[in-house]
Image (cartoon, rainbow, N blue to C red; front, side):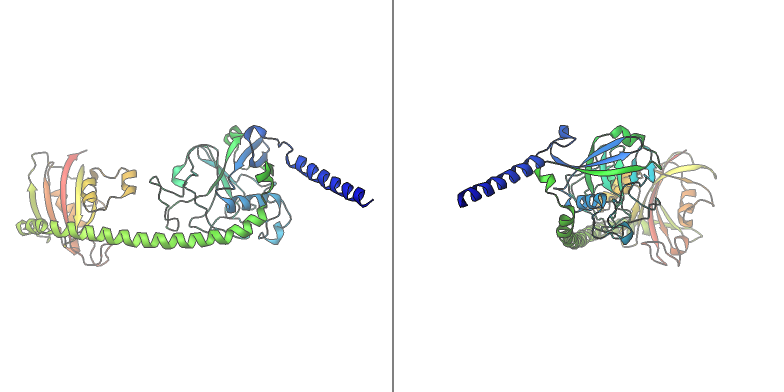
Length: 399
């Protein structure tokens, strides 16, 4: 009798295991996309299916899944037990850029009651249409519930730069957004969404054992502290590296300045002093036309402090020599002759305007500008109050 009971009990256990196994192996609705964790975003236009990246961005995916399923432990009381995304709108749509949703206030400033850090993975990029990424307000720790889906590639939003270096995400105007999935079905729906369209519901689809075992709350609670610690270490290392690079850059500037200062001093000794106090020396005499008042000319310039250190130039080779090449200036094509009007009303310092007025096309001049003809007692940016400046200017042409 005992043997029969044991046999029955064993059979029952085997049966339960087989039932559970069969349930876990039940095909999901998107088998053509293989195993994985998917978000099914049902809109009033049609359905968008996104494959998530829990292996590379576990915290961000856990956050999204827990919100979608109404089980996130950190939401405000008003959202507890509710499927957070159901019924929200795409409150921000920028043509040929992206669609953004996930804000219950539809203002762009709403959140679920908490913020968390940006997850950075160098292999996840905004490199095509259909990328799912977190919206944030800058810095490391401003992610909440808002997300966006791209219309096209948007590489400036990556957490790593084009050289594979982690960006200084805590700096102003540095964009760092966590990619945590991509559209596998319904990109045409993404492209058709307009501002105000509604997400009727967001369903999480689990296909395969790994996805079925993904417990969003457990992952969130275990991985979040580790992410926060990684960000602290990342910022610490970034500061160390920045300080090291700054020291190297300053050493290079000082070395080049020490080498070039005698040249500037020589020009200064040969310069003629004008009635205003401006000192002017012709390094090269041009044979071109002398511009008239009101005309616009183009000028190449190099700006130096009296110790020979460069502070600005529109010549790429000059800034490269000092280790001061500016990626923003490269991107905005600012390394080219600068237009300026020959006019007392031109938006330039007085000494620069006076020097340009004394030039003709082809001239290259050294100009020593005393502080009262430069930025005076106020100073500006890196130029301290009462600072004399030196320029090498070349008039390239007349527009």
